[in-house]
Structure formats: structure tokens, C-alpha cells
Amino acid sequence: MSTVREQLVVMKFGGTSVEDAKAIERTAAIVRGRRDRNLEAVVVVSAMAKVTDQLLAAAAAAGRDDKAGALAISARLRHRHIDTAAELLDGERFVHLQPAINHEFDALDDLLRGIAAVGELTARTNDLVVSFGERLSSRMVAAAFEQRGLQGAHVDARTCIVTDGNYGKAVPQEAAIEAKLAELVLPLIQAGQTPVMGGFIGATAEGITTTLGRGGSDYTAALVGGGMHAGAIEIWTDVNGIMTTDPRICPDALRVKTISFEEAAELAYFGAKVLHPATILPAVQKSIPVWVLNSRNAENEGTKITALAPRCASPFKSIAAKKRLTIIDVVASRMLMSHGYLKAVFDVFDKYKCAIDMVSTSEVSISLTVDSNEKLPEICEELGKIADVKYEGRKALVCLVGEDIRGHNGIAGQVFSAVSHINVRMISQGASEINMSFMIDEEDVEEAVRSLHKHFFVDPDETVFDVAARVPVAVKA
Image (cartoon, rainbow, N blue to C red):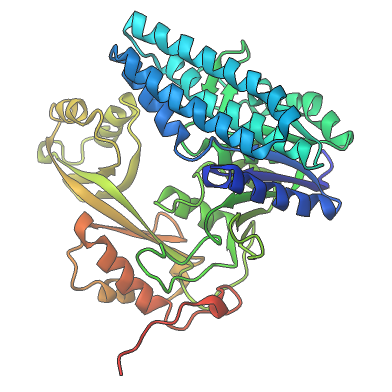
């Protein structure tokens, strides 16, 4: 078993933390604060805010033979990166970095022209296009760190994050990643440098560029943290940590001080935007604490995610909501109690690689929820061979997460009493001890969340929630 490097912290900064020169200045100041405490740091950065979306748009434009549109997007991105670098760096360092930025954009332009010429955009080529965002941001941040005395050292993540060839959502090869980190990144740390790499991107063993899927920069940080046996992983974003619910829905939402890995994973999967669902898996395996922190408010303590969280007087830690879901009802009275029926149903979803969020069954029917309509007609056509099928869109899942829900008597009654004025379509409790979920119409989400939050967080446990920072709710005289 490898020794934990207690002094090593892996710090991931999201798109809003590197979106412009001012944000990168803040990021450098945060990293300096860690280095001043004699901590070693590996920094993982996302693409600048909105860049991934624009690269995807450029790739799509090229794929439909709109070469001019694709190159126009690339030109705007080139100017944005060069302008940001010019603001960040002194003359000599900017003169050194500008050719590297131009070289990357020249390569991107050639790639976009090639896609337009062929008239086809493959998943493999799409990954290569979107990889430019992290490749560019990591170069700029490393140069900014170097100028500010942090000894920034750029590392191309594709040399370390080894994956399979499942383009668009590549699967990391953790043993190979650990070996590459030891070979390429550890010597930089030992030399007193601050390695900076892009998140989200990797490469196959043959060197073909891949991506880990949207939100994959968090995953990269956890893979690096796990592979290097770091003492902590920090996810720097633009909120103060994990909240009791979305503050845009409930202005009096509270910061959760500490939460368990299991609770955080449930919240991430069921709609909380702070973490990528897969982020914490490598951290769980190595028992590495994960912190969720705010780069715009670095003094805030954030949320600590650990293997075991302290007991909480409240049954729930947080409420998440996931919209744009579809309920599929599969009714097959003629196959009542038929052996293999459930397997036949789930095999259809497996065939089309369609993930299922929630399942509810009765004697003759199965109701399932999915968050992708991409293959819905084909799925329903196949299911129609063994059952009667109907589906409803524009549904949402509301998920309440907390340790030991089963240990609180009457909790289901409280939940559904709080939302008694809202039509509930499906209910799930029992599959997980820490999650109670139900399906409602999309239009009812905000009302449901506000009602639940008002009921369960009226008298919050101060050991778990940041009550001191609560926004006072105006009371009419």
C-alpha cells in the first residue's frame, strides 16, 4: 500500500475560476496560499467558461459543412485567449506564449476544415476538437503561475490520463494513470514546481485524444488525487460548497459543512450541479477527503466530503432536483409472472446504452424514468414487442438525501404531507438508506423544493449546517 502524501493537495478550478484574467489572478492567489502553508499542489483546470460549448458548436458546424461558421467561432476563441494572455503576462512571457496559442488554433482550424471537407463528425474527432479548451487554459494558467513565482509547469493531461477508446465518455485506466503520474508529475513536485494540467481530457494507450464526458474535470482531479495518494482534493467552483438546496430556488438555503461520500454521490447523480457524479469514486477508494470551495470567496470554509460524516439531527442534508426526465410505463399482463420478463425489459435499455434513474414495479407493470430521449422511439418500438408501452415527458425527479432515513419514524408521511398539494407520479424509497425520491411535473419543481425546504430546515442542526450565514427571510409586519 502506498504512503499517503499528506502535504499534497490536488486543486481543481472550474471554468468560472479561469474565465478571464481577473479570475486566473484569483486562482493564482489561492494556490499561493496553499504553497505558503508548505503544501505541494497539483492544479487541474477546466476550459475557460463557455469555451467547451463553443468548441462543440464549431465541431457541429463543420460537420454540417458550415466551414465559415466553424472558423468564425475558432477566430473569436483565438482572440479571447490571446487577449486574456496579454492581460495576464508581461511582455517577454506573452511573446513566448503567443506562438503556442496560435499553433493550437492553427491546428484547430485545420481540423475543422478537415471535418467540413469529409462532411462527417465522428465521436473521436469531436473529442479532439473539444480537447483544445483545456489544452489552452492549462498553458495560460501555467504561464501565469510561473510569472507569479509559483513555478508553474504545464503538463499535457493526455500524457497522464490513460483511457479506453470510448470516445465522449472514456473510461480511465487507473493503474496506468498512477504509473504515468509517478513518471511525469511526481518529479515536478519533488523539484518544487506546481504542475498544471487540463481536466476532462485524456488519451488511449496509443495516444488518441479522448474525453471523460461533461463535468470530467472533477473526475480528472479525483483520478490525480487517487493516483498520487494525495492528502486532499479541492474542487474550486463559484458557490460556497454543497447547499441544502439550490439557492436560486430557496434564498435561505444553507451551506452543508460536512457530508458523507455516499450522500454527495447521490446528490451529484440526482441533479446537484456542484460535483460530477463520478468525481468522488477514486477519492472514496483511497479515503481522500474532498473539499468543495468557492474561488470567489476563498475565505469560506466550504463543504468537506468524508467517508463518515457526523450525525445530524435533521433526517436530510440536502434536496436536489433533476429535470427533463421521461417516464416510460411498460404494461404486460399477458406475461404476468413470466420468467425472464424483467431481464427482457432491461436488456432493451442496455442495448441502447440508456441509463435508468428510477424504477417502480407492480404485478403487471414497470415504470422507469430516463433522462435521454435520444433513442426513445427505438426503445419503445422494441419494448412494444413484449408489452404495451406509453411514455410521458417533461417530468422531474426530486431527491432528498440524508444518512439513515430509515431510522426516522414517519419520515415518508412528513415528506408527502409537505407536498400534498402537488401531484406525485412515482415514489422510490428503500433501495437506498440515504435517498428518498419522487417524480412530479417539471412545472411543480420549485414549489415542491420550497415546501420541503421550509418543512425540514426550519430548525437546522448547527453542527452540520452553516446557520450563521443564513439569509434572513423578510417577515411582513
